Image 1 (spheres, helix red, strand yellow):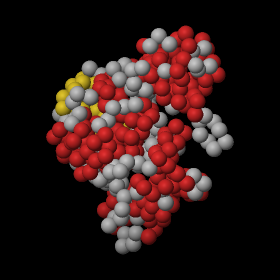
Image 2 (cartoon, helix red, strand yellow; image 1 turned 90 degrees about the vertical axis):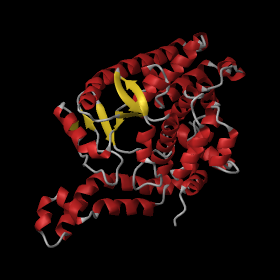
Image 3 (cartoon, one colour; image 1 turned 60 degrees about the horizontal axis):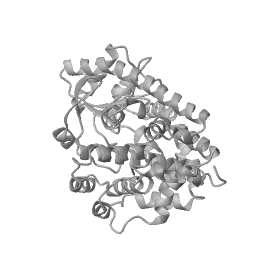
Length: 403
């Protein structure tokens, strides 16, 4: 890393070259002239970004082992097989969950990693996962949660059941698996307005862990990845660029790009989608029609903003951390001062009380445990963002105009 926090450009460029969608990338001069120190740095970068298994597969497919130092190659090999073992165990535990939900008549859409690893990458080792995301109809959330609890899952400590302002219920876990149950793909209180009913209407049959499930249409799946990466995680997940690139490669002949652009606008997400697609093109050489990029972001993206976005990706820095502190405080206030009905669900004794003030004090205490550290982090990030003019400008550019 250099003094500004950027990864040194040489190893970063070499890593991107190895992961590129361009078929001749591993034959480039940059790869041919790389040194042992370069490769060690590349492997370390890949490991920190959860990209080591994918890098191992790319290098192995192109018979590039001779260029990589033996110890660095062994690090990649071990990362690949660890990921294969972890994900195989996860799919093995997920299988009875999917069967139980199917036999209970609950339709399931497999989201993100569960579908990516198996059906997009085609090798479950290539997409490390820490949990599995599933989507069920909102009316089935409670029933789905009870089924998982009956199967031995338990809420993670400190999590609260909240569905009105969240797109999922708190994760449920057992000793080998974490499952996150969604009812939509975009946070209801956020800027993106995904068409949940349309997602279900356009979903198509697929299979995950050997069980029949549904998956999003190629256009919706790509949009979900872009929105999740750009909006909800603020670009701070390097492997998400590879997810987007691989999805486009896998569904190249099926994607209706016009629908991608139209739907991005309908969801109020053209900038998020346009920016993430520009990153996939600029960083990995992904093939996206220029006409679609122009429709999403007329006139293109200013180089300063693109460089700031690329910095965020490569350093794992979420641009959401640079958002105005007032926005975070407003969201915290909404989470604390709930309606009387919502307060009654959390504090049953408040139902008979004429005044909610004592219970709001309890709510402030409980919410502070969950959100206090996040607010403190937000404040610190705001100060730091002022030192990074590009990041601050990027946040401002992404922010939707207020009516």
